[in-house]
Image (cartoon, rainbow, N blue to C red; front, top):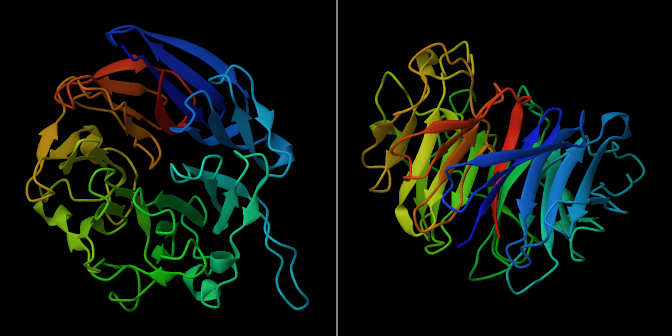
Length: 372
């Protein structure tokens, strides 16, 4: 029977939670890289012993680490993501954070993508040791308009890099603030994909770009279905259509449809989970009324049901960031989320009930499941 390890990236280092065979008991290991900011930790599905970590290492800046022994030891990439040198008359660009990591296509072992702050797209073809900027995006003629530096409170972020499992040349990415973009030629050219998405904060609410996607996911078995948790709601897109549908309108009005993460069921494209936060004008970024809850849809967003059994009933003033909710893929599906208050919550019945399996950690930035 496969076992699960949850990799936890925090504002002060990396931790790992290892489950027993029945996922009833969890043991905490770490910290590793204590004091360093860990933005993303991802297992390579093509080579499960391999993990990549996106980190900001104190005064030394942003980098990527690689482990080939399931996280026991890590080595820094000799050539981490970096923008090309500026030409005469151009403003210089520098990576402030490596924010997102995505394994490449199954047919391309060793290929990875990374997203940065400020917005930049990078590719590795040697397992994460050396990285090159993807010129088709970073040097696109429209790049200054697509990524003009309209920072969120956490900065301008390139995230949600998706590789179509049917076609390694079909890519998606998202920028906060900028929008969702698509390439069908392996990153050589890109186009905005934001039709139907609200942009309440823009002068033109129907703008082609300038949106604030928080997280975009693609279903592995039905890749034409995408879900998006946005600053302005929850959306679904069924390709080849290009217009997103706001499925968050079906959420309870008192809860709203603002949040950071969205997770899909690995075997059912109609099932997804979100974790709403307070998105009122003050944008407190806490659970609504201090009462956290997961909301689940079984019908692609037509209806949503609250799943809060076991979660705090009051005074839980935290939120869950875009990389901090995941599933473990097991037949009896496990769902997990980590909070800005340093807690990890687990459900081994697909979200029906929850229990806390770790607490008093630093602020959690990311949570990912590795199986072995």
